[in-house]
Structures are given as structure tokens and as C-alpha cells.
Image (cartoon, rainbow, N blue to C red; front, top):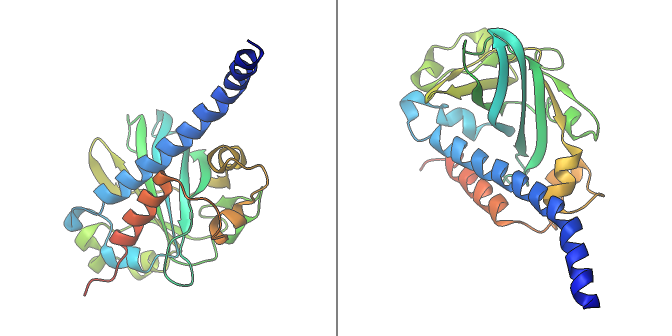
Length: 229
């Protein structure tokens, strides 16, 4: 009877942790689905060569928007950083907040993808409680889609981050200037079951146990960024 009581107490206190961990797992699985779907149609997706040259990729499934054209937005997602050997890092949970100028009018939920073209925007996110302001700390522009990459202006191509959105099945570049990205320390603790990992350790350490959702995301990223022979 005593053992049954102890087990019941452990289940009571562990259930919220397991539930929170499952949420992070679902976000990572959704991120893998999004990046795979948005690269499945080259003429209407992120240009392949831009992904191949990316220093990091951030994916935010189902960012919630409130208001009409100018309002607020908040979303949670992940960022994976390119390693020196060309592989991708473990996903780092992050959040995005900011005004919604440039979002499609009437859209309530939007998938976002950010392609980092330099390393300059990555470091602020890895600094624990640091933050990255798009358009402030780094230059940002709506990314060219498909064949539009060939007609992009020099001003656009000089931007450090390209931003994309998908809503109602449509995919396009989007203005995200003013949005702020932060590491989600609570989500890191839940997903990796550790309150000691720093954001930088998540993306640099190779000894962190890899969950099935992480394996799937890294496989998808490897596939969509692989050099075609």
C-alpha cells in the first residue's frame, strides 16, 4: 500500500512535466513537417541554394496573431545552428514576439521560417537571457520565393536574415522587422529534462541524449540542405 501511495504521488507531480515535455516534442515535430513541406515545391518554396548556405534556421509553427494588419503576435519554435562539419545542432527552443505589420490581414495562425545567412544574429540568442531584435540588431528582409531568388535586389540579398510565412496553404516572404527572438529557458528545461543546460550548450554539446523528435528534425534539415550532385 505504501509503495502504491508513493507511485501515485510521483505520477501526480511528474504528469505536468511529462505534459510540458510532450508539448515541446510536438513543436519540434511540427517544425520538421513545415520545413519539409515548404521545400517540397521548389518553384513556390524557399530557394534550395539559400538553405544550403544557411548558418541557422528558425521555425515557428502556428504563430498566433491578434488584431488587423497592425496587432500583436507571439509564437514558440526552435532554431538549429549549422556546425563546423556542416551538420545541424540540437534544436534550441525559442520564442518570438512583436508587432505584426506585414502579416496577412485576417490570418489568425501563421507558420514562420527564418533563414540566417550570417552568424551575427545567432550569438545574441545563445547568450542565456539574451535577445535578438529583427531589423535592429541585424538586417532582415522578406525572403525571395522559388524563382524570385533570381530577381531579388542587391538590398534584399545583403540582408542577414530572410523571413518567410505560410497561412491558408500559401507561402511567401513576410516583413518581421521589430520582432524579438529569445531563448525559451523553461522549454529547454522541459524538453532536455535539465535545468543546467544553457542555450549555447544545447547547440554546441554533442553528448546530450537525442530524442526521436530531434533525430527526425535533424534528418529533415540534412535532406533539404544537402548539396545536390
